[in-house]
Length: 431
Image (cartoon, rainbow, N blue to C red; front, side, top):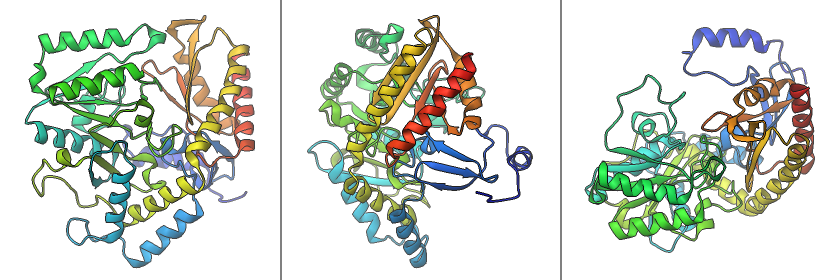
C-alpha cells in the first residue's frame, strides 16, 4: 500500500524538533491509516496492533458505525459546552452509564476529557462528600500525569521524576503480588500501620484502586483484598474509588472489571475505551456521593464533547451487538495457548502469564527467578517489534512486562499471525 512518499525517519526528525522530549513516542511508524486491528504507516508498511492506543480502541480502529455517528454529529455541531448549551445525547449517555455501572444504588455521572481528569474529580467528589483530606492509593498504580494524579501514581520513573512537590495527604499501600512475595495480609498490615503512624482512619476520604494494574504490570487485585476494602470503607465512611480507565468497556470480559468481585464501588473512573478513540472520560457513582460538590464545582469547557458522546453511544451499541465482552474472553484463551507455548520454549525467561479477558501480560525474568526482572529483554522486544510487523507495549513496576491489548474486534487469524511474529521476534532476540 503506497500511501505516501514521505518517510518515517524524515517525519521523526521533524517531530524531534517540534515536540518537547518529555512527550516521546514508542515507535517511529507514523500512521497513515488504521482499520480494526491493523495499522499502515506513511511508507505503506503494515502492523498488527496489539496495543489499541493503550486500550482505547476496544471497538477497533475506524469502526464504520462510529465513523458514521461522528460524521453525522460534526455536521450538526461540534461544540457548545455541555455546561452552557447542553444536548440530549450527553444525557442519554449519562443515563446509560448510570444503568450499566455495577451495583443497585442510584447513580449519577459527570463527563470530562481524560482519565486523569476523571481521577482528579473523583478525589474532589470524595473529599466534598466526606469532609476529609486523605487519599490512599497503591504502589505500582497509575492514575495520570497531572499533579494530583502523579501523587496518586505509585511509580516514580518516568511519571514523577523531577515534577514535585506533590499534594499532601496521599499515602501508598503495597499492592499484592504473589510473584513478588506481597500478600493481601501484607497490604492489610500496612494499612493498619499507616492509620497508626501517618493518618487517622477518620481523616481518610477515599481509597483508589485499579482492579487490574495497568502501567504497574497487569497484576490482578485479589478478591480477598477487594472485599476487605469494601468492608473497611463501609465501616469507616470512606469512599471506594475503582479506577476502571484501562479495565473498562468489555476489556476484561465484563463491561467493568469490578463485576468480578461482587462489590459495588462508590465511584468509578472511566476513559480509554469509552468512545472508540475520541477524547472522553467519566466519573460514575452513587448519587448521594456524586451530588456532594456545589453547582459549578465540577466540569470543564470541553468535558462531554458532543462528538465524543455520539461516538460513546455507538461504542455501547457495538459492545452489546457484537458481544465484545464474550469476545474478550475468547481472545484471552487464544493468547493464553500461544503464550504457554512460549513459556514452554523459554522456561527461564517467563516468570508469569496473567490474563483476564483481553487484558494479557507476560512477565520476563532472568534465570527463572522472579526477583530478577528481565527489563533488558522487554526493552529489546518493544524496540524490535515494528520490524516484525507488531505494535507492542511494555509496562510493569520493573519495566519487564509485555502487555497485549488487542482490539476486541480482532479476528482469530490476525491474532495467530501476530503471535507468529511475536514468536519470531523472541527467537531472533534470544538466539
